[in-house]
Amino acid sequence: MELRFCAVCEKNKKACQFATGICKACYKRKKQRATGVKERPKWTKEGRVNYHKRYYRNNKSIICDRVSKWKEKNYDKVLKAAKEYRKNSKEVMRPKRRELSAKRRARKQSATIGKFRKELIDFYQKCPEGMHVDHIIPIAGKEVCGLHVPWNLQYLSPEENRKKSNKVLPQ
Ligand SMILES: [Zn+2]
Image 1 (cartoon, rainbow, N blue to C red):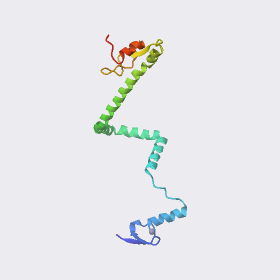
Image 2 (spheres, protein in one colour):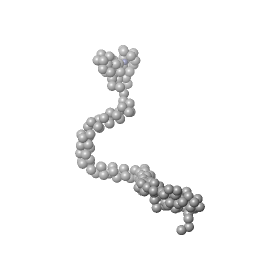
Image 3 (cartoon, rainbow, N blue to C red):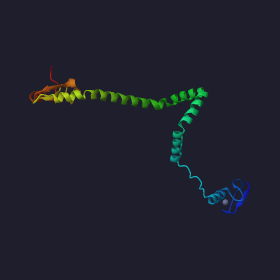
Image 4 (cartoon, rainbow, N blue to C red):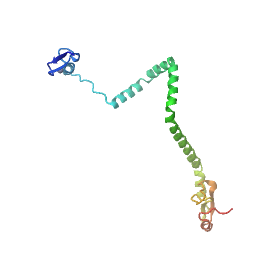
């Protein structure tokens, strides 16, 4: 490898690193000083991501167009990639799907209970004076656990309520 001497930084460098009479690095610095134009700062990861995001936002229709044209032309590739993706993501997706369906179930349940809220409030508001609202099947029972739903409520006199305590009354 042929070496050349740069008079500016006074170093021996490989010949391929020379632009003119001086090395590329020194040439760049010299040019910058002369034109006052600073070299574009190095990309940070965040900056690059933001740049692409902005570009995507501003050129959405062009990009979408280009992508859909490419997809049309390479339909077999699209199918193959989708198949591959499904196969690879199966292991990843399965627990996720399970979690989602559990969440959905929980949501549904709470919504069902929520529907009775008005009825429950009504039941409490209509409680005759001196009476207590009682859960027919106690919600904190030892053996059974009743629900806080309208059809599990009844009015009891304080006396009856004391007698019943947390037990399910024999019908
Ligand atoms: Zn140099």
